[in-house]
Image (tube, one colour):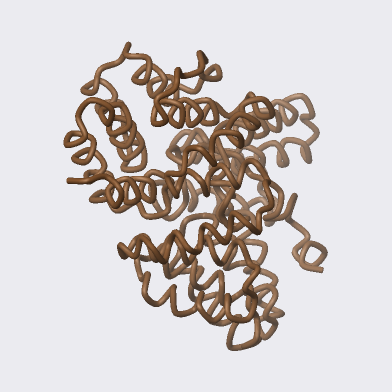
Length: 372
């Protein structure tokens, strides 16, 4: 229904949008590009295609990975009859969306979406002008905001959804995800307790509550939720591998990681995490290499192989998430010979506060098990 009403969506949030998380996200480092995109779309609706193209090109000059703007330029070119140029822009948008990784496979589908969701937000906002008293478009726009890493705006939409439909467990669970993203972990746990009491077989809610508990240092509570999630996943390899890694249970993670290395050649993290599990278990790591173009995982694999130094990998870790990944790996590599050094690295991971990362949970579990 929403797709028909909006008239402008080319896909749904359920369709995977792949784009590197560290390159551009509206509401963080891409607000100027986003504003140019919105102005361009307004001008195009008014019939000024030339001005729209100019603004869209300005937007992509600022944010080269802004796939929505590139696709929109293709649409304007298409409508003006320049089919060859339009196809080139469509292909570029497709290439960008296939580059990078979706979110962690053990998390809610909304949080597996990566990249810009400006088009969806605009479309649902139009729908809400005439259907503001309906819960569904509020929920859908909240999902787009949450996928776009704008949890404050998502939270407002989820709260409106719950006023209109107080019994919605989906809205309550997603509200908790937004609260957790804002660092309000205790409030998130309170909502997730209600969701899980009503639906104890929700793997997404168990995962979210585990992350919130672990953020607060409630290691046993988090692990109880993740063990239950593992049971409910019934061996699905991608999600099960991530949950087992959060638990720092490398024996459980190993077969799932081996399956994913065979099944998904495109995502180099599977090979990296497989080697991490093997090293942590004291086994000979599998010889592997990163997918072409994946420079960060290439750096991590080189660190594991001993061909990249600690100092070099830390310099290349250009975000808090990547720094956490590098520090956790340094702890894994140090553990066999110097447990004190390993603990110091893992404590640094915890101190970074990236609670949703696999490495954050694994580091807390390693610290809880390893003697001082």
